[in-house]
Image 1: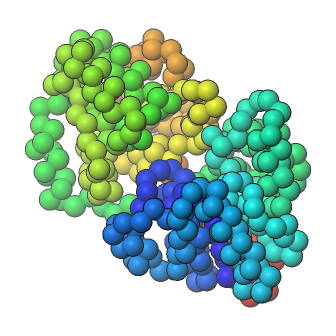
Image 2 (image 1 turned 90 degrees about the horizontal axis):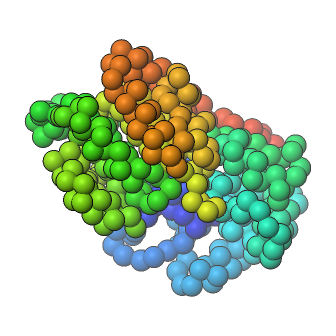
Length: 374
């Protein structure tokens, strides 16, 4: 049995939550016995979600240190009784209280934001101690790999595996017609899909939006998502008098999100570094690519690995508003070039399908799988 131990799991939203859930589901679909140890927060939505999954989910509630300790204790018991044959952890935090394991593969994911860039302190020692228990560390980008090396210098056990994506179902004709009617009269249409937080760079887009509207009077900017910056972003729109050119869409279902992506012309998320907080990779760019959307991303973190500069979009300096403006304008004013980038983005999205990505994880668990222990 493969046990996935995680602090981040749906129905809570986020990139790590989506990755861990998709990995668990892909392994289960491949025929492996999977069990998930996850933090619990209670509520009918969480219970309904758990019941709908094709594998058992063991939830632990309470204070965060308590949750980590109980999950580690339960996992240690399964390992001792040989019921657990492979472990995948969402980050070093989920392994901190686990006893050292020698006879089974332990794979730990690394995302970037959980790893400080500098300074040697108690946290750094905790991270190194947790990594000492693993068989392999999987970084979500080359950029994240550079942060991992400081705590886990054994390069033979370091791997980069980009997050996978499921092939989205086609947007229904009814929904497509509904969105077309809703957005009638606007062109071009830009879109961001993200948790609304400073590092995403949505505020940078809003700051240059008045200049863009002068060049493209029917421009519409769709912001899909919610988060801590929502109120501040709404105030920016009001202060700039851009209410007619911006729409906030929160709590969108996957189908609705995909409908808006399919109706848009350009995906923009010019992320930047905010302290240690930076984009580890940026699956939102790949999800947008499925709809042949070229993208604008910031150069900080691993987002530039999700967007190939001058092939599937453009990379700008996310902390420089002039760079953001110039790149967006360059993409909007040349329809043929933008569409060519979108076509290349759609082709590249195939490389991120879980049916291809999963095999890379299975290589790390290969010995036990070949022994029939999956």
